[in-house]
Amino acid sequence: MSVLDLAPVIPVVIVDDVESAVPLARALVAGGLPAVEVTLRTPAALGAIERIAAEVEGAFVGAGTVLTQRQTKDAARAGARFLVTPGCTERLYGALMDSGLSFLPGTSTVSEVLELRELGVREMKFFPAEASGGAPYLKSLASPLPDVRFCPTGGITPASAPTYLALPNVACVGGSWMLPADAVASRDWARVEKLAREASGLRG
Image 1 (cartoon, rainbow, N blue to C red):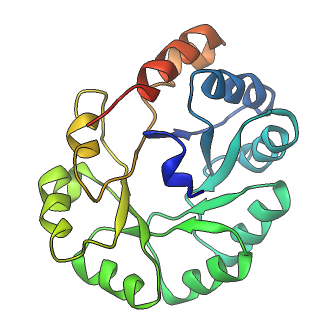
Image 2: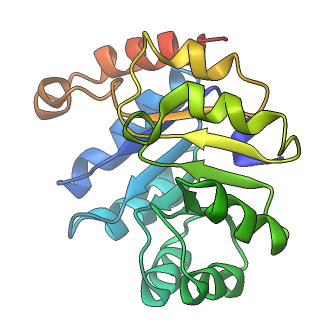
C-alpha cells in the first residue's frame, strides 16, 4: 500500500529531543495517523526515526526534507520506510531510486511534474502548496495529468485541508497543526492524540 493511502494526513514532525519521539509517534498512531514524516532539520532527527521504527507499533515512519544522497542512506539505515523531498534534481532522484524505499519527490510546477512523470513517478509532493497556487492550481492539473497523485504540504490547515482532499488528484495532505509547539514542549500527548484523531477524520 502506498504511504498516500494510509490516512488523509501525513504529520510533518520536527523533533528536537529524541526522548520525545516515541511518545509523540505513539500519540499520532493512536489518533489514526500511522505515517509519520520526521524532517531531517535537526540533529535529533535520525535518532528519532530509529527509535520510532524500533519501538512504535503501527508506525510507518519516514524521513522528510531529504536533500542529499547521504541523507537517503542515513535515513534508510535509521529505519525510514519512505523518503520525502522538497524538490527534486537528477542526482537526488538517483539517490531516491538507489535507496530502495518508496519516496515522494517535491514538485511545484507543471514542468517538474512532467519530468518526474517521464521517469515513471506517479506520486509526488506538492510544495509549498499554499504559496504555489494551492488547491486551485492542483485542480487545474487533474484533467491533463489524471494519473498523477499528490500530497500537498506547506501552509495547509484543518480548515483548508478538506478543499484539497476533495480534489481527485490529492490522496492526502501533509501538515503539522496536530503538533502545536506548546503541547509538544509540555509533553501533552493526550492533546496531540486528540488533534491527530480529528485530522484522521478529515474528508473532502
